Length: 341
Ligand SMILES: NC(=O)C1=CN([C@@H]2O[C@H](COP(=O)(O)OP(=O)(O)OC[C@H]3O[C@@H](n4cnc5c(N)ncnc54)[C@H](O)[C@@H]3O)[C@@H](O)[C@H]2O)C=CC1
Ligand SMILES: O=C([O-])CC(=O)C(=O)O
Image (tube, rainbow, N blue to C red):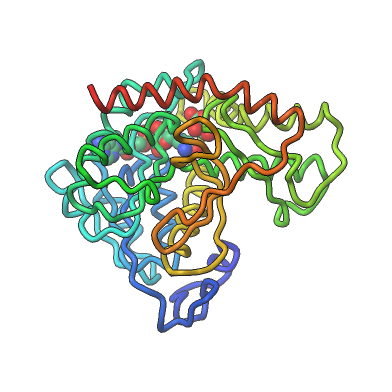
């Protein structure tokens, strides 16, 4: 999508930068809200969503610095109207009428930390934002970026349940960056065109819970077992690689904004009735014995249309699946407990 969006300037709808299945006159109005819009992810994500012709209204919310980001992004001559909101008192106004809420609010890691080390701060932030979503836009799809995703998604689910608004089809943990990394790393080793590569990534979004299924990668390449092990490890440690390279100045922001924009675009296409939109995401699931699990998901007019099963796994992937379950279960349980205390 971005290749075509960025290649042409000005008025994408008029110029025919259209997404599959629409004539320019019939692109539905869609309001997208970004909570944490002034942060390291929030700013480039706001830019990318401003470039998306499926968005008619872009609502940017943060506890600080939103006016500048909204004024800046708002000058870009694309379809959406931009509004900035700051502070608790304005959260309701930011959320009202949302079709899709994207949440990159919260603190990022520093070297030496795990994603779970962010729990104490980010769990409370996600809880409060989820309470507001349940109140002001209970019908919206929610894309959870804030870490630890393995716990923040269950927190949001529990808060929505308490409010009586939970719809498991509408809550998504964003794991697209794992897929983006797996595609990039695989293309480099398989010597294939990265634009044509796809790799499902299942499980969760932390360390060994991230399980790329290179046996299902397309196009297939004859990579040795050692290379597959190395690619798996690099995908699992991708976030840490960036945290260490940034040396205390945060975690992935630009690649995450790209991944978040890809996933949001897929959600909007699904809402708009575009057929066969399939992305990996961490959702409520019955495909394993865990209540939440990332896998391929078919997106539709109500959010999740179908959670696809895992398909055939290699022996190495089967081992990885068994190995990740205890950690993922404990992170899910931690989120559920927090939301109910
Ligand atoms: N799911 C994924 O694949 C990834 C997730 N992340 C996570 O995304 C989160 C954000 O990362 P960055 O943007 O780098 O952090 P950042 O610190 O640069 O930005 C976070 C923003 O959230 C805002 N914020 C804090 N409390 C808020 C609240 N109650 N309501 C609204 N906004 C609030 C802050 O003011 C700040 O602007 C972190 O938890 C990070 O671990 C980061 C990369 C990948
Ligand atoms: O590693 C982190 O803390 C941020 C993140 O989730 C990622 O880059 O995948």
